[in-house]
Length: 124
Image 1 (cartoon, rainbow, N blue to C red):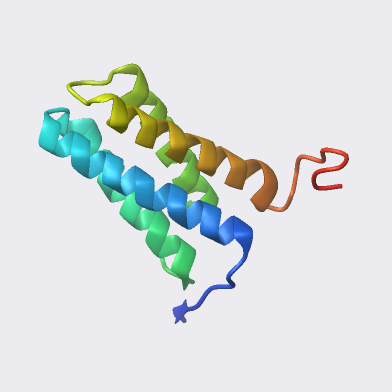
Image 2: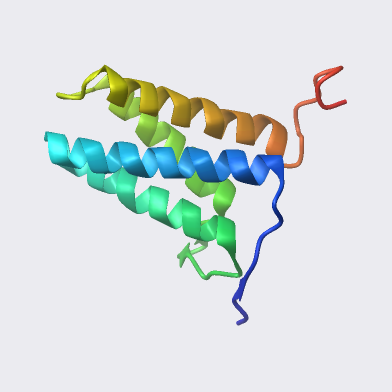
């Protein structure tokens, strides 16, 4: 087993990193506000997502499921959507952070992960 730390600085990496950091800030803000269980899950997944962006070969595995950046990003987006739907005592700024994190992570999914979606004039 070999673990290497490294990354290639691209626009999609920066978008994913900013989305992960905003999700982490959102989770910390919500944990202080009262919605503790979902916020702690969001913090854990956001930290694992950010680590998975920088570390290659990290053995994040439970059974046969390997937790890679795309899977952790998907779990993070789902948690952010749940937090957005069941918002507790978070001010408007917290909702903006949540929305920006969701938008950045979705952009990373659509354009960054192997460019599975082809949009003429944008990534074609």
